[in-house]
Length: 113
Length: 110
Image (cartoon, rainbow over all chains, first blue to last red; front, top):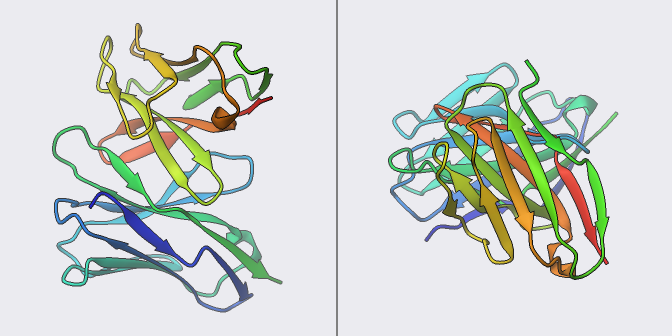
């Protein structure tokens, strides 16, 4: 029940295309869903996050879509650029108590020039 | 403002040796976390701390110990290293909902 399932494991997209990464969770106690971006040799950094009271959040070219009934959320990268090539992790958090993050297994994105 | 720093950046150990990884943050955060990152397994929580003098077990605590004697520092110890502990270790501190990660320590246990 604590798992967060992320797919695909890897993704190759042409420059200008749309990258889509999906995550699914089971525990309905999760109430905060961030996405982290990690470049090689670096630590993950927060990219964008959403709470379940909204179905979509957009920041620039990055959009989170959230489906509470299906317990799924996804990251969409519009107009993908080579500089977006990185590993992306979704996470699910219960913000009461100790704020433990449950991370997905990651998606390695490569955007071809 | 250095954020979260980790030392060392890279280390090679022989099986059975011990070592301590140091994490420091200058953001005055109460919560700090230690994760390990392995291919295909994402980030798994080893131990965490909700404030100075406190520690708690995460998802994969076996073989590791931690201490939080000062608010800004969170130490991760390996008492007797095993090849299964070969990994990249990340420390993070939390401000409200955002975790800030350090650059990682790559550990190889032979």
